[in-house]
Image 1: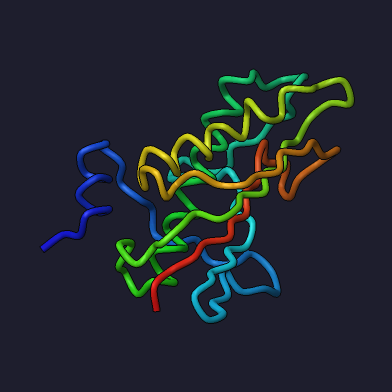
Image 2 (image 1 turned 90 degrees about the vertical axis):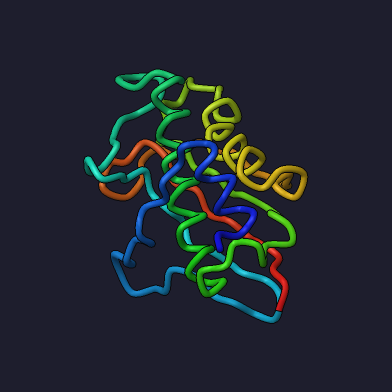
Length: 155
């Protein structure tokens, strides 16, 4: 029987990707007690890397979509950390969002809303979280967005 969160994902028409493998010398997540720390997830989906620089060749709407993809990758990693059971999530604690942006771009929070809104859509009230949204001169592989997360789970 599917859990509450898996049912919600189905109702929302969201199919999570497989948890992406690390691209360098790090682990995708660390579980300490009832906390899960998920490494930064880049904007990469089944079609490949979502690249671009906000304020130059990428619109806010495209950035929001890229951040949503990062959020889906975060949830995929979280599902792995929870042994496949997303109903173990107690609280989305904090997201850290990084936007590949020009020096004069200032809509970082609007872009990272793509990931934040997804957390609330999927997890409801426990999806509300603290957050940082910052601009960067560049991100790995030229991606538009990267998002990391901290989650509380039941043990």
